[in-house]
Amino acid sequence: MNRILKRALLPGIMAASLAGVTLVPVKPAAADDQVLRDAAIGAGTCVVTGAIRGRGTVLRNAAKCGAAGAAVNGANGLRRNPKKRSLGQDAAVGAGASAATRAVLGGREDTAGDLLDGAAAGAVINILTK
Image (cartoon, rainbow, N blue to C red; front, side, top):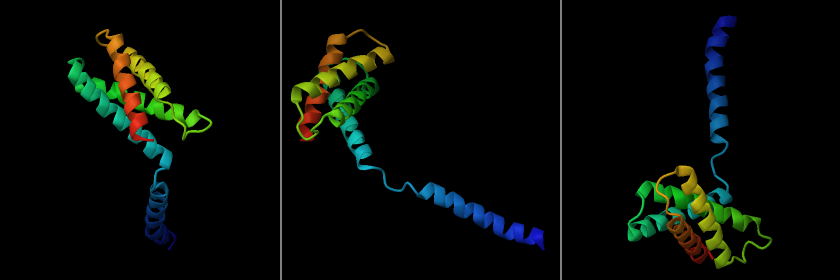
């Protein structure tokens, strides 16, 4: 009798616990949505600026400024008043993050272009998310 109960109940209990664990985090936090939004805006901006300048691949440019967008979002979260955003600060954070990401990714040395792409991404994020 004991084996019959184990065979009948154990799979149901395991399935219920697995479903409960995987379905708990159904909705992501709003902050995660904002980081993804800024990273996507940055990636799109860099793909366009890279195409205009004729530098880099689409994937490298998207990765470079996706990281810049996430850094701009993080810098805005650290401010005392996140509603009061500065165009210059966002451009500077984007430029620095873009150059740092390019250093990690490797490739051609085009530091001025990396700074330009990141600054453009930071400025576009500032303008679109006010």
